[in-house]
Amino acid sequence: MADQTELYLVRHGQTEWSQSGRHTGRTDLDLTAVGAMQASALEPLLRGRDFGLVLSSPRLRARHTADLAGFGGRYEVTEDLAEWDYGDYEGLTSAQIREQVPDWRIWTGAVPGGETAEEVLQRLGRVVDRVRRSGVDRAICFGHGHSLRVLTLAWLGLGIEHGASFPLETASISVLGWEKESPAIRRWNLTTER
Image (cartoon, rainbow, N blue to C red; front, side, top):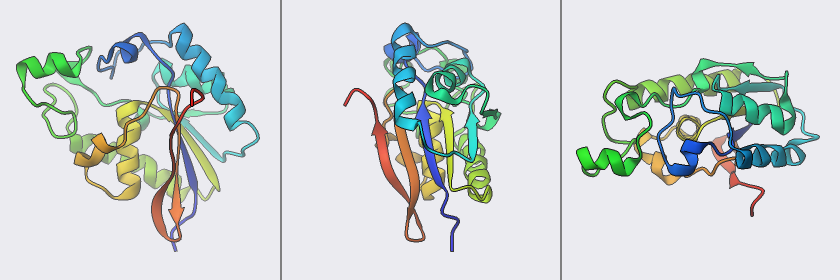
C-alpha cells in the first residue's frame, strides 16, 4: 500500500516577470506589491493545517510567499524545488523564443544552456520520493509554475509532455494525494481570486 501523504503545492505570488510572461528560472526576483497581497491572502487558507514537512525553493519569490503565507522560519530550503533553468531563454517570453524556434514549447523543446526536461523531471522526482518517504500526513512545497507542474507529473507517473495540461496561476494552491492506492490530484490551481 502506498504512503498516503497529502502534498500541498503553492506557486509563488506575482513577480514583474510572471506578470509579463517572461521565463524566470535563476533570476532572483521578489514579489510585486500585488504578489505580496496574493501571498498574504493564502495564510487563512492554510492556517490550522498541520504540515509535517515544509519545503521551499531557494528563490526569493518562493521564500517570501512562504513567509507571507504564515510559514516564516518553518520551511527547509531545497535546490530541488528551484524553477526550471531556462538557460539562454531566461527572461524571454514564449512568443520571443518562437520568433527563433517556431512551435517551441518548454515541455517538448530544447533549452539551450539550461536544463533538459529529463533533468528537471529527475530533480522534482527526488522531492516526490522525499515526501512519500517522510511518513507525515501532510506536506507542503513552495515553488514555481513549471517546477510544480513537473513535480505533479512525477507524482502521477506521467511524461513531461503532459505538463501543458496543468496550468498554475500565481499564488495558487494545489493538493496531490491518493484515490485509494493510486496517486491523484485532489484539488488544482485554487486561488483567492475565485
